[in-house]
Length: 176
Ligand code: HEM
Ligand code: HEM
Image (cartoon, rainbow, N blue to C red; front, side, top):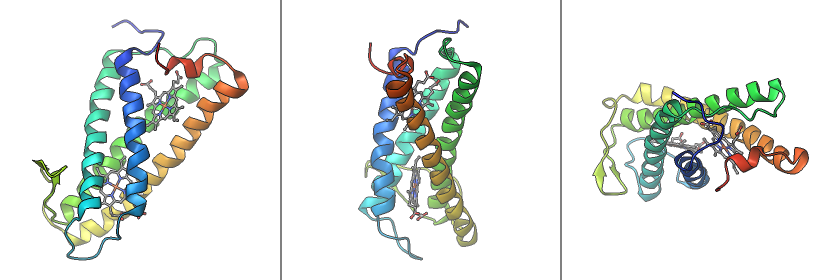
């Protein structure tokens, strides 16, 4: 397998599509009504779950693409930046998977039945279990917060490269 020097078009499309979906997903998560015992998911929760599962599927496809089409870090960077950017990128993949899977498990333990975008029934990962649901709710919140913090570090680094170092790093993820 050859290691490329630049991201190809599919990697860039996956990247910016997931950025757009996460930019919608966080506000829905924060604004949707609080969960109460015995409630069934309303429209905003259905949309949150549907967008979340879409992010999960796209991230799994993107990860497969990344593993089969490896890209080398920017060679002009000092070693510590090459290593730290690799660490942050793999952490982002892991946290998106953790945030989406913990959300899906939470919905499963609530015993909900959900159709993605009211179209396709979502298979559940486990049967209803109130105690497990309470435990996993905290995990979903912790993962989604850890993802947000890691994203702020990632976006801060990208902007520092673009506006302080003024090097080619941002260019690597832009069209062209
Ligand atoms: C990366 C994707 C996701 C992000 C960023 C995210 C983010 C959030 C946020 C910010 C909240 C509000 C938490 C709070 O009130 O403090 C939330 C709640 C919730 N999410 Fe997600 N979510 C994601 C994926 C999913 C998925 C895939 C599911 C289900 C299949 C899901 C199910 C839920 C449920 C049931 C709640 C309400 C429980 C609670 O308040 O913790 N989420 N999510
Ligand atoms: C405004 C927001 C964002 C900007 C400006 C940005 C910018 C970039 C840039 C410039 C790169 C290439 C870095 C390099 O070549 O070393 C990159 C890679 C990456 N970004 Fe972002 N990013 C943003 C948001 C996000 C979000 C929301 C995610 C969510 C998962 C994300 C995940 C990744 C991952 C996983 C990589 C590594 C790709 C790989 O090697 O497979 N980024 N980003």
